[in-house]
Length: 60
Image (tube, one colour):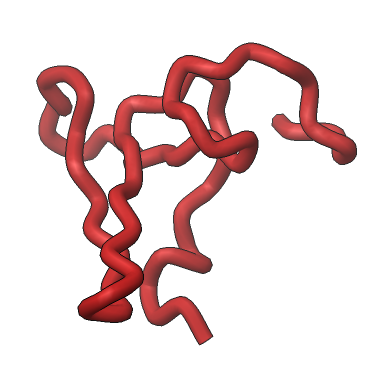
């Protein structure tokens, strides 16, 4: 349903953010800092990339 976005793991804070365009029905992933080669890309499942509230599951 969400294409590749569903494959991103959670981190808090994350190194990526996502932008939802409801009119175009798209989700874009953007980085919020420089990413090193080979570094995993993370989004924050709470919505904002820097939201440090705990999620309902154990994140490793």
